Image 1 (cartoon, rainbow, N blue to C red):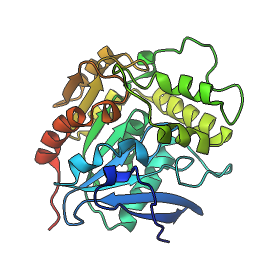
Image 2: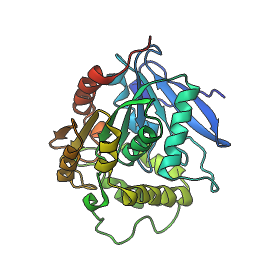
Image 3: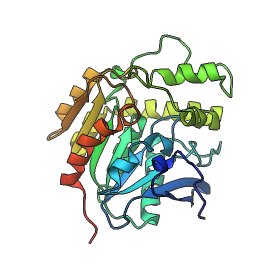
Image 4: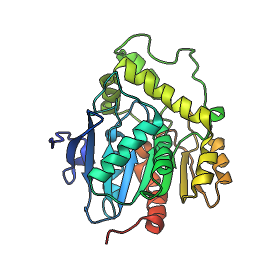
Length: 285
């Protein structure tokens, strides 16, 4: 089923995004594409309580050389939010793989932001034929790297959250001085149900408890780029060095940026990403 995106925030007002809703596991999964369809595929996976819109500022910087594909994971954004489906990281990854199959994509560099990095790794574990390389943006390597919030509460005390609660939740996602959190990103949290919000958070924790990400990546043997804003307030930025245990891993620290460099300074985040994909992206025959 094709739908109109109807979002003026998409692609910064540039070329229109092609969007559709795919029926997977009897639930609608929102997918959007930008850039030439015959260019190397780049799959962008958002983090918890976010959506495809978190990548909007980056997309125009990537479409000159890539077919950029984004999905709203189940429970997020414009995808369905059922109460009776699994939100485990491997299941989210499996749906992403099926979405790429439906789009006719045979190879892709997969980029994940925050917990989206865990989904990217799980996809590579399931579909090593599909994933040619991985990019993790401010993805904590283990639970030891997590910075506990000042408040003991793990989430809002009511649902839907108040504007004040939303801004408090979102504030640790950004560190650049003067950065204004886009209202669209707060809307992404408002659109979630309490069930999907809490369940997806627990799913990420469970995946990290099972095995640290560098250990998973070492077994995979995929080319790896780690981009980390040095002023991250959710994951200790020094923990990015844990990824050096992965043979050949490349790590790029971005001073002055926090947990969301893709939003805080898209050009700086895109520069190492494009240099990496220029080497590892697979061109369509």
